[in-house]
Image 1 (cartoon, rainbow, N blue to C red):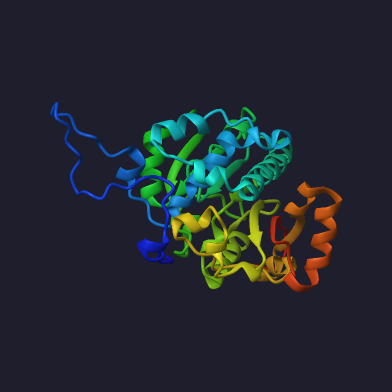
Image 2: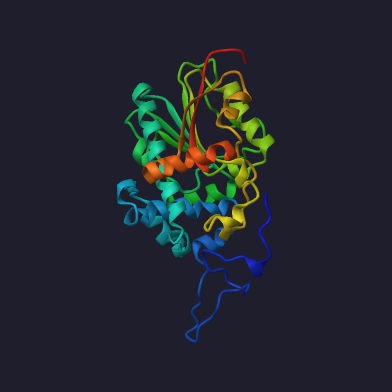
Length: 310
C-alpha cells in the first residue's frame, strides 16, 4: 500500500485528534472520536470519502448529473466527516457523477437482460449501487477490505435478503472462489463494478484481477471499471482530492485495448472518456491529447467475457 507523504505536506479531509485520549471538559464530559476516526482507515481505503461527498452534494454543481443518492448525505453525517475540501475539487466531483451515470447505464441494461443475475461491487467502500440497480429479483454483493466492511456494516446494514456483504483483498489470487461467485460452467452471468480501485494496485495485480475475472466468470459476464492514462501514474498528489489521502496512482493504461489483451476471453465492449461532459471542446482536446496519452485522462471501460479458450 502506498505510504502517505510526511505530515507537514499532508492535509486531512477530516480532523484527526493529536491526543491519545479524548479531550475532557470542565463538566466532566469528553469529546469522543467520530466514527470515521475510530475506523482508522489507511490511505487507499480513506478515498471512499471522495465518491461519497460527490454523490451527496455534487448535484448542486452539476445538476444534469445529479445521481439522487438517497443515503450518501446521511452517511456523511453519521461519519462526522468534513468533506468541503473534496467538494472544492469540482473536476473530481464531475468525474464521480459521470462514472455513476455510466455504471447505472451498464447495470440497468445488464439486469434487463438477466433479471435474476448477481451484481458485485468490488472495493465498494460506502457506495450503495443497489439502491439504483435493484430490479426486484436480482442479487447483489458488496465487498471490500475488512476495515472498510466493518465500517460499512455499522452504517449500511443489508437492505434485503437478496443482498450480502463479504470481505475481499483483490491483491490475493483466488478472490473469485472465496467470494463464492458463479463459475463459467454456471448459466447466469455476473456483473462486476470496480470503480476507484484498480488504479491503486500494481500493474501485475491489476492484470491478475482481470485474468481471474476472465478465467472464472460465466460467458456474458460484464465488468465496468474506471481507468486513468498511464501518464497519471505516480502523480496522485496533483489530484486535489486523492492528494489529501496520501494514496498513489500505481496503474494506468497506455491504450484501452490493453484491457482485453490480458486474456483471450476478454472483450472491450465499450470505452468512454469523461471529455464527453465538456462538449465539443472536451472531445476535441481528447482527440488532440490521445496520441500522446494513449488513453483518456479519465475514462470508463466495459469488459465482457465471451466463450473461447480459457
